[in-house]
Image: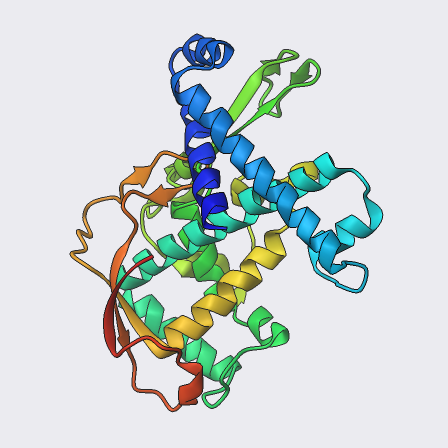
Length: 310
């Protein structure tokens, strides 16, 4: 699986470099000749496909009819190896890197805003209970301030910073702009989250309160906040991703203080090229255990103070 992850990351990075190329004819020529970065991309994709197919083979060998995970459910009704392989890769692309990116940015902002961290802890203690070791689904849904903080974090640092669509037929946008068939239309969620005309004069500030109405989370239009896309192409894994992030945040925030090492708060983070927004070099942090009354067996194996790269 480490080979799979390395090949997957390499393929993502090289694929993203195509989108930023000022002269697409260059990478197309390299693809035709199987040279340079395009050769590396082809090899990385080959490794990803090979290991994805092996995962399917192993699942068939072990038996999948009695299992209820997503892959087993697909295998029970789809008898197309290529389609199943593409499903696995889609799960990885849509869920692995995006959730990791969102959590990294969230803890970066939380380190810079201790008032938000305190408010999240107060809400968790109030909703989940001070003595509870974990939070169930219903309790996670009731964490409105945490939900707002996650949305606000992704407004400033969306896991997918820009995306493109191609027009199938001649069309007209709501503002009257004509778009001809075959035109590539790109929207930039990272830039949209910093537009004063959309979010006001405090658009560069991290303010979870902007998402709350009388203490309850209030969503914005997906066309104003396209982090999860919208319409027919809205993210299918949206709710699962939010629950994953809430689960991790609740467990970590209640037990540990996360401090970014040498945090230059006035400087924006530097991103590495890729299909999802990942910080170049990772995020060096200092993790310090808090004094809590939670069961010690839930605290994990982390020492009282350690250095980690998220």
